[in-house]
Image (cartoon, rainbow, N blue to C red; front, side):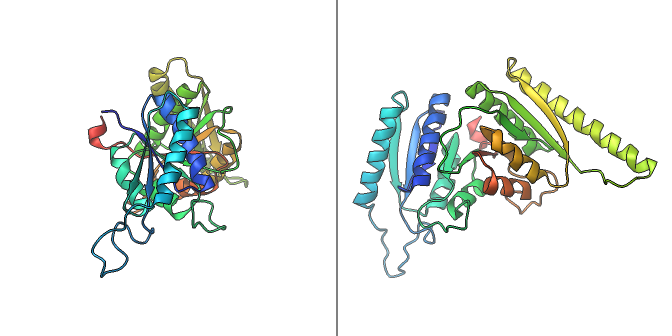
Length: 294
């Protein structure tokens, strides 16, 4: 099944940068690119806002021209990528979440039209990152070009979402021809003197961290034998701060949608939320593909 790379486009600078990233991803994966514009107000979610109006509004000509222009520009810059553009009668977030069921990857910008200046990640991007049914690439900040240097960084914690993040990160590093950094953040030791039992517990935690990184590295290098993998165990109180700092020199950070300690009702864990809001490079949220994607 030739599942496309899907990107939400609304004409904002953020969405146009996201479209460029999506075209690059489509080229790397030899997949088609689908530009999608959900043209109802976000609060409408595909339902007419006027209860007395039983029909849906027609697509706007202005949006059609914007989509056609964007598609044509991308075809010119990425001649090997098949580009299509659709307008959908639905809210932007709901439309992209629905499209994610049939996509290989969904790409969203940091903030689209109507975003508030204080929000690093707009509500549409946050909803798609949290509820997508396939991996979601959050592209920000909009003023930076597509990164070409730096490693791909993956946070691993022994959970299944963390394992999936490492696998996708290895795939991305192989596509880009760059290295992979696997990071495991364990709780920091207290700076004060500690009883022997606590010291032994810390040593056991460090050994567990090394074993986890070794096992993860062995799995990803089995799929990509030539890949350079750095194992980086870190002791820190806040895993998100470590990953945000590392994102400053990275081409991409890949994280699971929810790691250890997550609640069933929580779509994005606290570390994942912090990364998609504050990372200095694009962030790939590693949602598993739907069952029919296999």
